[in-house]
Image 1 (cartoon, rainbow, N blue to C red):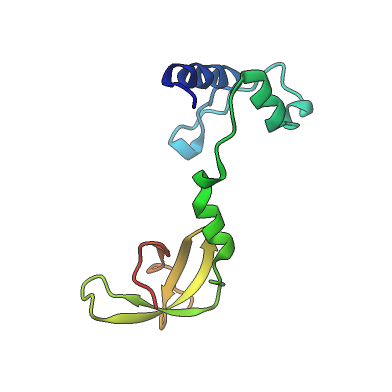
Image 2: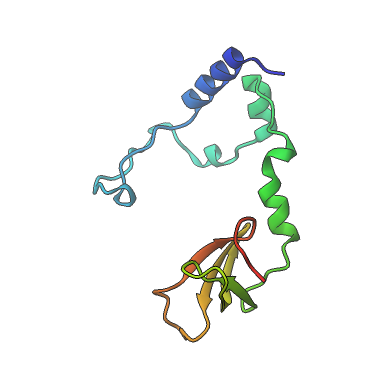
Length: 131
């Protein structure tokens, strides 16, 4: 088991290998990203095994990614209908359509809203009251 000090050292080494983030319109700034002068198309060929060996780090165990396994096992598909508990009255359920899925999250739209996306909401299949 890795000690806290060696984990922090590994994280510091990883941060040195990661390019610094620039400003972007996505985070509210209108400046462009800083470009690395030495960057090339070869930088895109990242190899996790080599990285872990070079840094002395170890891969996260598969148990850290239970949400991925759940999403792969999920039988929820876009277009399916399900009943969702009404937040203001938990004894009442409303029918909703699955718009899209993202891992264990479902983007839902209450039936009757047609193509109106204003009331769409995300729902976590692990915590929501669904039927």
